[in-house]
Length: 328
Image 1: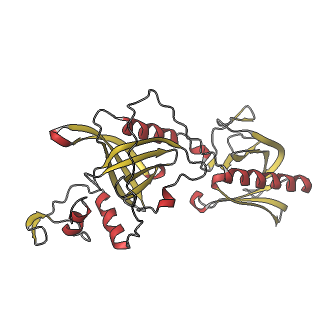
Image 2 (image 1 turned 135 degrees about the vertical axis):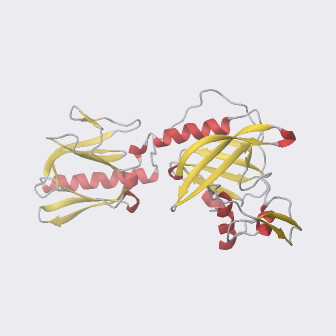
Image 3 (image 1 turned 180 degrees about the horizontal axis):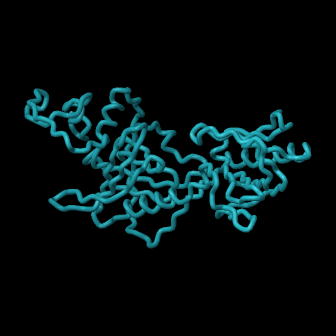
């Protein structure tokens, strides 16, 4: 989805790790020089001539990364970054080519940060029965600080309940059972919808609900005495508020070596234009991952005055031609 200018800005907790100019979106905007920005949450590409031509790819949507050999100017070939993604049950593929054929940092940066993102899901996702308790202690994450540890807290997920230890950190809440440390839960503030005290058949209960994207789990805990329950709830509220202002996503990446330094390319100043839904749909069609098993028959196109392979339904040859920079 093409983004408006404010959505291209870095959000709270998002860190710009690498930025490269001379990057071509080969599949969607061939011949258009653009800028590739690699953050700890996503990949952003936009045209330098027309910034409204852009795309944002969250690491959560990426299925895999690889390289492809593509042709560039003067018959030369270079290694391009290939991304296969999935969004709303559809697969899309993207190819990014560095027009500086001696620089491969567009591949190494994206691959390295993507691997770091995938290996740090505990910062962002709820974990049940995880391997994060050792010798009755929490294995803390980098940058994690334990705020409090409360023993004797009952997890009410079963009819009889289980007693264990409840921990609050600057990143998440954790509970684990005294009798079986593998019976546990880790819920980051990022995946927490709300925390409140409600009445239940067990008495006043700390109820914590995860976000819809985290399956909307409802967790109930009994804490005695009631004063301690209110203190614990207030502590969670305070730390979650602090976290929301400055999230810790856990994705860090260090360059193994300093690559080729590229000159900064100034962007053209253009007026923002809102794309119509039809135009956006056509753009998505450019990246749709075709399995290549179906051959489309060539047809004579009156607009181009030549025969060309018939495009997929919903896309015209004229609209594809007009997407190429410089064509009327």
